[in-house]
Image 1 (tube, rainbow, N blue to C red):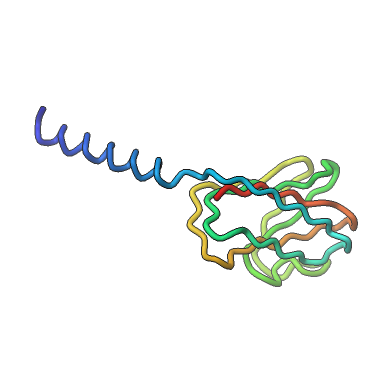
Image 2 (tube, rainbow, N blue to C red):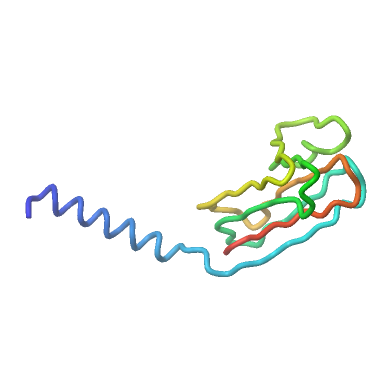
Length: 120
């Protein structure tokens, strides 16, 4: 085996070991009913969250989400946000979160439930 092949093999083994040791293993489900339309609701992810999927339980309504407080509060959002269309979801993998990582969500229709599946 050449020196280059040896280095490449070692890198592959190190990357594989890193991913194996950092796999998300513990699931948690968070549900939040948004009782008021156009109100921002914070969703705190558990410490050590590695990936999450967020969606609306009801598939007839879109929602907006942000990673900054105040961005989606009110009928006219004031900051950077993403719209998640009716029946769709948003996922993020390979997170390295702080202990106070939050997602902020809002919906134009009151009484809708947001569902988050988080893996730590």
